[in-house]
Amino acid sequence: MTPRVIVEGSRRHRAWQGAGLLLAALVVIALPVLLDDFRLGQFALVIAYSVAVLGLNLVSGFTGQVSLGHGAFFGIGAYTTAILFTDHGWPYLATLPVAALLGLVLGFLVGMPALRLHGLYLAVVTLAVGVAFPVLLTQPIANKLGTGGVAGKTVFVNWTKPAWFTLDVSNLGWKYLVMAAVAALLFWLATGVLRSRVGRSLTALRDNETAAAVSGVWPAEVKTVAFAVSAMYGALGGSLYVLTTPVVSPAGIGFAITLLFITAMVLGGATTVAGAWIGGLAMVFLPYYTSQWAGQVGFLASVTDQPGLFSNVIYGVILIVFIYFLPQGLAPFFTKARSRFVAIVPAAAAPALPAAAEAPAVPASPAPSPGPVQSGR
Image (cartoon, rainbow, N blue to C red; front, side, top):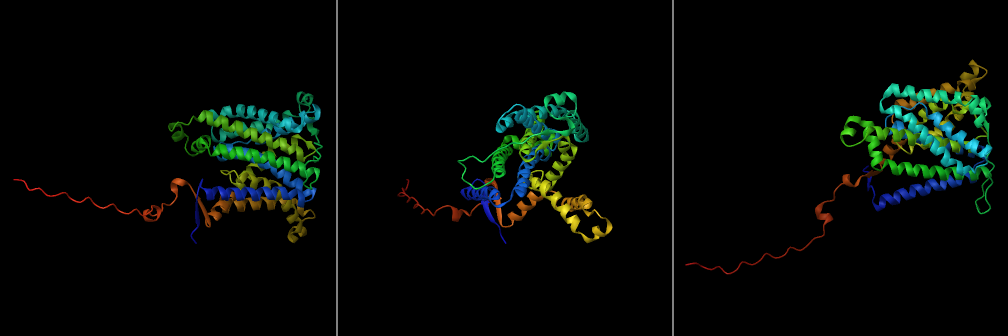
């Protein structure tokens, strides 16, 4: 079957995008109306994780740099919001810019070694940041700042649905909708940046750093900016995470969550923006359902009296299968499947129409009649 070709940037393409955004908005609005608070809390956690995974996509997927300290940036945002809201009485939304700024600065500082280090050497530097950050939170100087030490920081954002909001949702539903609005803004900004000259520079640097430098891309600037923006998104994801949990602790933002972010990035698609949403869904629902499936397997019940402990084994098997058959992630797979029916092509690559069908027929003007022939002598 020949796919329908839609030219990128055309009126039909904008209508296609508008229909997709409208459908996504309707789904987001319908969830707090249809679901109970437990399930809605899971989707709220998906939003927080998706924003953080998007930050990891920016630095690893689009720039090709290895970052194993993303959990530290996530924790910076979570603790900043928790401390400012609980100890200093800041409005929740006012803490988001502060968390973003701190994440931006920390990401810039961590990104400085990326100017000279590559591959495993850069991975070791970021790994040190991710491992050291939870330890620093338990030190006396951190306790004076209000981190709460090993026990963590207790925080509860007691938001009630405003009177002017007529949709029948719970208070958690209102939090979820606010989180969805913030995440939508962040994803929109990331999409715009990646489609700009900056995004093309990121991709060029990932594919061939030498060729990118020859073409006018400054690798030092691109790498540090990528790390800074990635950390900012990670910190904002941590700030949103505060709305979903009553306690922020070092155990919740340690190196383990960095590994989960990397897993989510790979599953969703490291070189896509939409893959961050798929990765967030995988982070929340895949461990939840694998634990249930482990308890339903009869063979495991006959081997051990705690079959739920084998949930990590099932989780690992699913990851291996996905990586083997879909190494690019789920988002590119869905895009390829859609292209069999609808192909979106750039304007420069659009198939040209035949000239006879494209240009209107113009009657040929009569040839000028020759003048009288004069015979010379």
